[in-house]
Image 1 (cartoon, helix red, strand yellow):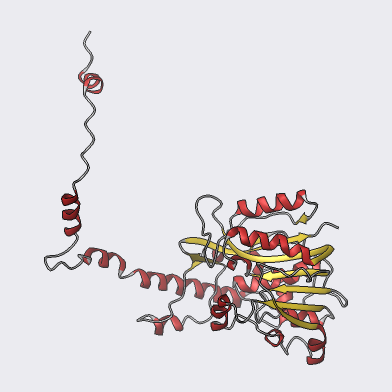
Image 2: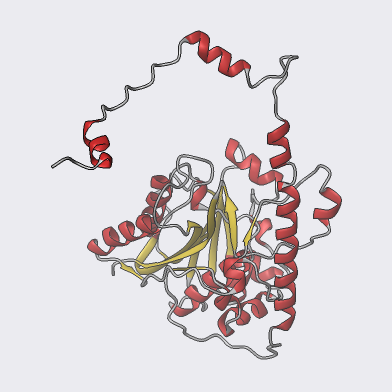
Length: 359
């Protein structure tokens, strides 16, 4: 019995030979084909594809910000708020958190409006963690890393907490970038917020020290709590950031608490940014760190990696334009409103860690 022609073709047809490697001359001809007759790059087709990308991004930003402004205005007005225990997890910022009573309380305490912004979430997250762990009271001692002009020191001092703020030494080359954007502190005055604390309490309870987070001095110790806000992703690598979190526990008394927020790549799989001025942590990094810390007797708050499913959880903001033809329009966007941002092609948000030192 003869095989049908289709099987005959499959079984008997020899495998075609691999195409030969182009010669150097042929490779050169292929490169020359990318040029026009004047030896100029032939980019017309590429230009047509890319010339409107900035405009599309601007449209996305405009609609996202307008949505966030409308949603902020629609939030209920809370005239009386109070601190309460919510059982804060290690988690990313979400729209549900921004809409919560606990976040509204800390915004009220800091005398700022409730807005859909991940940095505002970080402020509230740190304060909620400090409160829940019993450290927002007179006589406690707190240590801040990479503080810049954060309001925490002034707020803690208003409750009688003794605070040490720190930042990079002023002569460190890495401090220059933060100084240019007014995010670096060279003295404790940068932490003074007169709307939050009186001058006498601030001068009495707040101090400053230049500290490199990659080399925490051994004589910084005995604190009830420590914190950092979106700082340890700037230490040079993912490993250096994780090492800082671990080393920050050495500054605490037994049973003390560390709360840190940082940049988080919400995609648990695939590549991320490492060995760069700003790195992006993933779920695997936090879970591995937590496993190691728990083996050493420390307590790590439970994890919740859900990035949220509300409209502003799905809005991904893009880096702002600083100049160029779009400047007049982009400046009119005003205050950024976002919980998720695009960084080097990755979707990121803020993530908080809460660790209690073995006691």
